[in-house]
Length: 286
Image 1 (cartoon, rainbow, N blue to C red):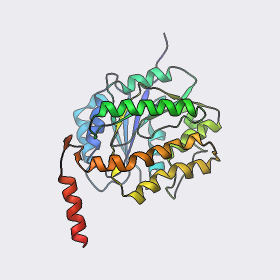
Image 2 (cartoon, one colour; image 1 turned 180 degrees about the vertical axis):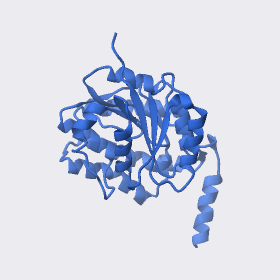
Image 3 (cartoon, rainbow, N blue to C red; image 1 turned 60 degrees about the horizontal axis):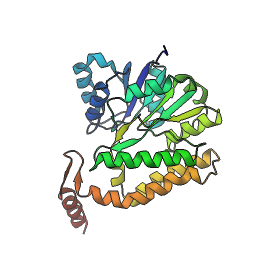
């Protein structure tokens, strides 16, 4: 019988009081519980830590640990979580991730194959209408990307896992990114490739995430998307296929941003309130 690996879930968090509860509830509701859940608070100024402690007390069986990282930034916060966790496999998600109930089971099953150094899967935008349709579309796109750019199976920060031994081989290769210019998940994936390590795509490793990034102003969103290009350049990646995600993000930005103006992701209902707020904000500036 194949021995399944132990799994830690690592969640970097900075001012995530609006989303961390839903994220942790999905973690403690797994059909196969993780061996531990490690939340690393990065100097939050809101009630993030308070909410984590509440869920700690309510779910002692989930082995939730709350740590603090004083150095500001996602990379040092992630690194602290990796270094402090104990699992053979480290699941790395975002504070707005909402995991499918079978996520941990899928991770264990995927990493039972010893050649797998890291893995990622499809995502569903849990605060958008018709999430099942969105998931089907995401699966189709990611499968197409996998088939067209097999040398660049990228990790996705809101839904990824990496074997501890693989991380040990690349942790000195990944960038510290003090200027906060890269996609740290892509940086890890490309570092794994440099070491000849295998990154798997598991269509059953489903993670949910918020579409809140698509509410950014056009200039901010463009700068976010161009993190792909800056990360590629840092790793001397010239492949045109590797850059397909840039095109996809830019293509869907305006349609989805417009849709979110009429949709409340917290209540999962269509509303005009966001549009009213935008109009009021514009009027106040005139």
